[in-house]
Image (cartoon, rainbow, N blue to C red; front, side, top):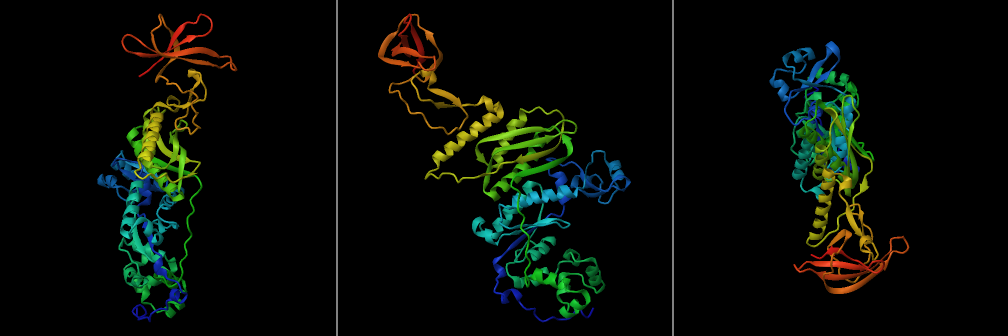
Length: 498
């Protein structure tokens, strides 16, 4: 115990001797204390009793449970059989380390929109480290950035404890004790880290046990140990750990690199066919996609949502965009229309979202007043929503075709097709309403102007030879009529002027 109370002279500032300034870096740690439970509940919009189970058979026990489950008498450590006896409405999910690791990587890919350096912490509990010192100029002050990150994490369905410090290990330890007050100077770390319990340091079992036997209970107690005596008794591990946390030695972190394509899954604790529940779960996947695309400065023109069933094949819904985008709210609106028109063969047990082709997102064209760009964007959103509700083949665009024959001066095209605009070869006016098939006239109305001779199409076997006139009837209607130049030379009406 005397060694624990010994006063130690100040340690050398190794980083300053090397000419480095650790104050330029600022780390934000996110710790997910209830990760397994939140993964099980993030697909639920309601508050049903849910529990995470570890073990199999008679050894199965409750690892974690939500508030609704605790409210009916479920507790951590309870045998699963006893939990079922308490309530038959309990929804259970088996703990799956592989699925949890994939979910953590998904959050890391989403977090890339806030930081260029994101590192995984695959501990228990798991979490992330974000270097945010270089992001403050882009996102504003630290308080605003932290609030946005925490709000985004909650929208994904998780709750995170935060810690902010000049070193990654210090930020992690502050988050473990739920101390979210930022530490900007390395000199203040010793005092702020002092209350961290020994259990949170993650030391080897032998080192942890030896420190406990010496009466060491916290990070502050470890700091008061003699360096030479600690190295002799316990080896260099503890000293290196303290130096990393306090910024006296380098603590490099491996940056997480997101994959080139986006693929995420979400399991539901109970099967459902309710559209509201499916939209709620799909929204969280789309939010992950949005963050993934922002981090890559990309967009998608097509994505696929899959709905899993117990015995039937997955129901796949493909969403295609006129212009590549990444806005989660817009994608959810399109998906909502498709879900309402999709017939499910059986209840859904899980969802998956895939975007195989990520495109480079071009910056929008800027206008002084923004009116032209906003109008174009509104037209695109309208067409995409109509396609989602009515089907892609039910919504078509029109484009002009160079020529003289009135029936051949336009054709159907995909909405938003950027094809070269055909130059008009006709100087005369044309009616807004053109009949699909010219109708014979019983008698010739009073002519206003004309004729305009159109003689074309000999090369494709659908040639015409006509004289067109503008005419009006006794009730004031203006017509576009023509007389054949061949055969019986009959009169036809071909359109109406507005």
